[in-house]
Image (cartoon, rainbow over all chains, first blue to last red):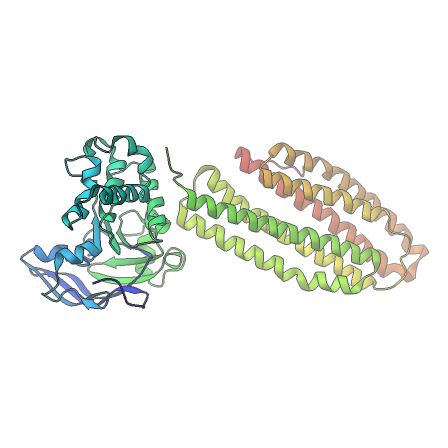
Amino acid sequence: MAIQTLTRDIFDVKDLNLWYGDHHALKGINFPIQKKEVTAMIGPSGCGKSTFLKTLNLMNKMIPSVKITGEVNFDGQNILNPKTDLVELRKHVGMVFQKGNPFPQSIFDNVAYGPRIHGIKKKKHLDEIVTKALMDVALWDEVKDRLSAPALGLSGGQQQRLCIARALATKPDVLLMDEPTSALDPISTLKIEELIFELKEKYTIVIVTHNMQQAARVSDKTAFFLMGELIECDDTAKIFSMPKDSRTEDYITGRFG
Amino acid sequence: MFMNTRSNFDESLKELKSMQLKMAGEAETAIKNAMLALLNQDIELAHSVINGDNVIDDLEYEIHEKALMLIARQSPVAKDLRRLHVALRVSSEVERLGDIAVNIAKSAVHIGNEKHVKELIDIPHMMEIALEMLTDAITAFYSEDSAMAQKCAEKDDQVDKMFGELVQELLTYIPQNPDFTNQIIQLAFVCRFIERMADHSTNIAENVVYLETGKRYNLNA
């Protein structure tokens, strides 16, 4: 499933509908996501943005009451097809959660976890992967002298960067981030934002955030969701200066939501 | 602290500043050329100043767009916010300087090749002082040096005084040289333009003081 397509869209979502039991949570979403860009999704609680994010690596497929229709094409293949290999999909589409959730292991073992699962055993190779991933998240200088120390001893911001390094270690194409800074202090938040800005050189990033200023700062594209619908998706500069839909304007200016 | 947390924003602020310096440089060149056109009765040069003003206008527009986008997207506060506020104000002052260059160039065109009523000595001298003020204001802006900005404003009194005296003198020429009335009026206008130019430089200096201290000063007073 290596990325081969020449189009700029890594995901092409077509007429996506999702129900949690009777609740229609995503309504006819059409949404192309471009390679090596940061796409931010904003909207009030319950608007469907996190549900949409989780659909991109089928995290919500495990919930029994969930019903999904439409297409989620990743690299030209519809991942809603029941034959999709979820382990393989998630190797390509990694995820970072709200709160850093390192395993109760050493810093090194946390980052090496994914590569080991995918069969990499040689110490030298693992060393390379871990070093590179930690450098990519600008954590290397802070932890290089204590790689065998427990990851849970790191600060919240460091833990979150470690989790991003852990996601990067399997060399994904896409990084999904579900409110990655909502549990962090402002400086740690800005560090993650700087990181996102640098990571987009190599990765496609899709981020859900409650913090509109964060979407404005870090993203190239911004999508506004409301009550399960995608109201508007455009260049972030346009969304935050001249949005087309008055509902988008009302939300980003804090008039409702 | 191993990483800069706002390198992207800092980079944009640097770009904004270099756009502002480019704009100031364009305006300064336009004014110098307009003055040369007047002194040397170089009509072609005067027209090139008039036609070139859109470059300065476009730069002002680009600076405003960029500054507003940074306000919308980067949540600036404290000095960062003042810096963007100042970028908007200073670029408007510089745009006016570009208009002054055009006005002087238009006066040069109006006078055309008509022999000067007398050798122009005091007007270039007044312009020299006004240009010094502009250079000081731009340098103060570049280095964010409020002490230098205040110094720049001190010369404004000198320019104001010269303006009053020169206009008085020019008016006395009219009864003796009625055929040169148009030229004399144009030269009086030029004096007024130079006086305005000094005021705009002072306004730029005031913005530098505001950027540094957060306080408004009226350096024109």
